[in-house]
Length: 308
Image (cartoon, one colour):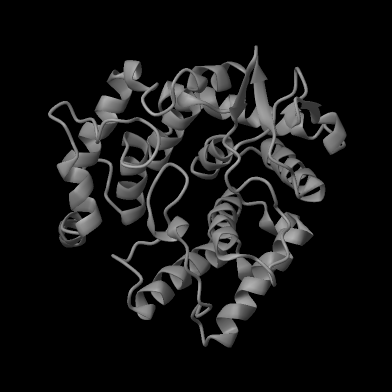
């Protein structure tokens, strides 16, 4: 493992993140977005950097200390989304600690409880008409409602402490409900006169037609399905089981590899929402196949596909 860590630290993308680190441990300048603290920590964790490695350890320490920087790249909407339970700056911060394996922190535990409540409340919204209304030609969430965003899903997928039988059952029921309401349109959060986009990346359609997915939506599918698999709900939900079985069929047809030709900037450009590729680029088709096959196998593994 020590030898492997040394190799990962020499990875070109990892080196770029390391060189962006300031003397106080902060990565890049922004908190949220491309070339940001968030995207840097995401990439380091996905590449396999351990939390006690100096570059990541110092970044996590800075993330704990410099809460005054959470508006960078987010503005004031980060706090607004937190206050309204839509998952803002504090949820993002908690997810980053969780992704690095630090779920014992008080902040993470608090945000886990909020995320569970948001998923639980979603069960009560029986129709999309009860979720949104129209305001100046755009859909907005009805006052008093909230809805799970990608950071709620990421946070729960990357943590274990909440997984009581009762919570597992509730989460399966909530995700099943979201599947049945899919596709969900883009809906804004209204705060006073301001319309704010919630973190809905990958969260609008939990039941897509996999035979007609555009490449950009394939990236969102991989990201969402890996999280749902880690969440442990796939075997409880027929629509998700069918999607994983379709993935297994693609691998079988490719003799164990995902050979479908997909190409979109979402796969290779690491940001707050995008980024899936661990290979340095996809100019060689084998690298694309490596990345997509690896993600496929993660999904099958966490879905316990042998019992589906």
